[in-house]
Image (cartoon, rainbow, N blue to C red):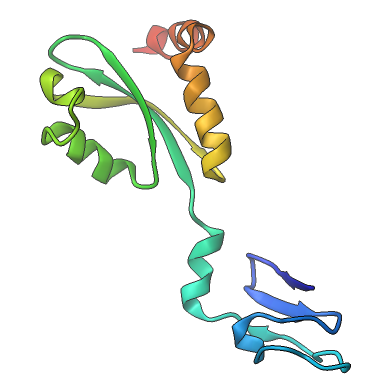
Length: 130
């Protein structure tokens, strides 16, 4: 068993178990003492956020809901015609976005926003402010 915290990227091993690669593999009956700093390339696992977004077509006044890790790049893809549905309604602008910690919760929220109840929520809370 090992414990990693995202704030300081330190891991501690408290039992005789297989440890992460930066601890050196299997520990024997002795406990690993102290902590070792996690490699820099491991730190990105802690800070990936998934964005659920709603776009509005400036030409045909329709809406599109999706999710991505990088909203700026995804908006560029939509506006360059790389998406089949959105290519027929260019250009697009972001009218709403929210961050989620993982894909599962982001997908649940995206499905909600695409549902009738979600569209009513968007109409009451977001579209009114435009």
